[in-house]
Image 1 (tube, one colour):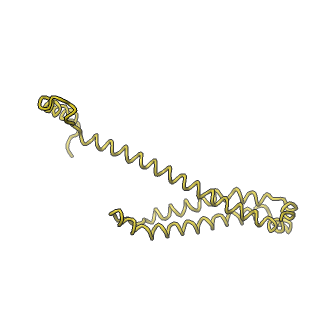
Image 2 (cartoon, rainbow, N blue to C red):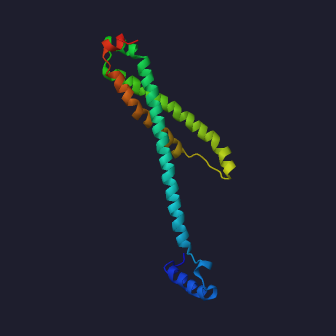
Image 3 (cartoon, rainbow, N blue to C red):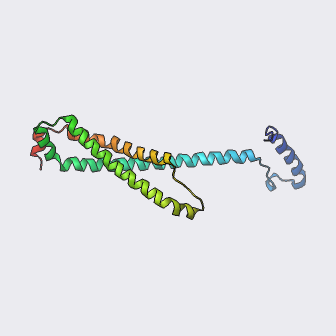
Length: 173
C-alpha cells in the first residue's frame, strides 16, 4: 500500500503545472482517487438508507395486512369466542390461539416470500449480469422478521378477542 498522506501535495503540484498551460481552471480538473472513493461511499450510504426506508415501509404494510386479516378473523368468530368463554375458556387461552394463528399466517407468508425470492433470484441476477446466491443467514433473518411482524401486529387483534365479554360476543351476529 502506498502512502496516501502526500495526495494533497501531489494534487497541488499537478494544478500548478497545468495552470500555466491552460490559463483557465475550468478547462481541466485534478481529482484524487480518495475523493472519488469518499463520494462513492456517500452514495452507497444514501442508497442503503433509501433501501432501508423502502424495506421499513414494506414491513409496515405487511404488518397492517396481518392485523387486518386477524381483525377480520376475530370479527367473524366473535360468536365462537363467546361460546368458548362461556364454557370456561380463559383469556390467556384465547389470546394464545389468535397469536398462534397470526404467527402461522405470517410464517406461511414468509415461506412463500422466501420461495419466490429463491426462484426469481437466478433469472433476475442473470438479467442484471450478476450471480446471486441466497445465504442461510439471509433466509433465517427473512423468516424471523416475517414471523416477528406477524406476532407484533397480530397481538392487538388477539388481545381484543381475549378481552371480549362473553355475553356481548354471544349477542353479536
